[in-house]
Length: 241
Image 1 (tube, rainbow, N blue to C red):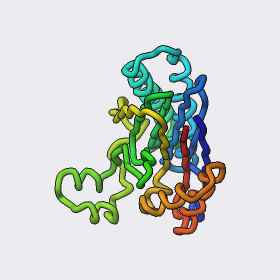
Image 2 (image 1 turned 90 degrees about the vertical axis):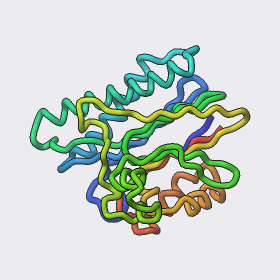
Image 3 (image 1 turned 60 degrees about the horizontal axis):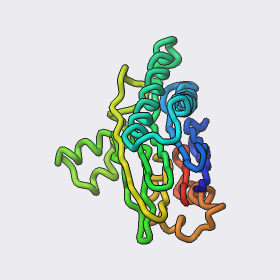
Image 4 (image 1 turned 45 degrees about the horizontal axis):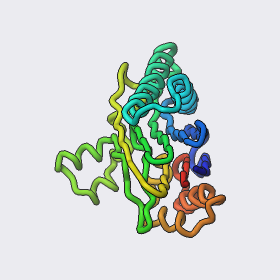
């Protein structure tokens, strides 16, 4: 199992509020991408706290031999732990008002990939023919689409596309989506913040992944988003066996 990760402030923001971390657990891999929100430095602190707490909780509960359901529950518990820490921090001072973050995480072993997410940072399965989105965005535009009030095309350009309806640390408890993907021979995944997926279409992202050398793939994805104007922080983690 191998990975490449990268993060960039972009061309329009004053600070990078994204965070990314990948770490091996034996031959297995855990990757987490977060996109913070909040005034002053609260967004940057929220994403950093989420990554730190997620890994700490997962490390404390992980051992070889856990069942698939136990791993899924551990990932969900790790998300909840991150939520509790940020929720508490946000209430300690006015500077932390509105503090929160998206979070998408993947744990991959020799036969299964486990995905959890809150917010609109995404996980994609990279196939031989294109990208297949695993996660759903938790934003207002996606909600309107699910309710049948707007079309898919309207969702992509909706003015409230970036208005989250679910985030880590905003409420006392958080609802986490989880996915389990079994595979036989190989698997490749992309985790990213909306600094990439919000400004580049799936075909453009896939074209970069398909043509880039794996060692450079994360940096090439950053370049793609910068070429689109770099209007947000950009963060990616690419996993492949």
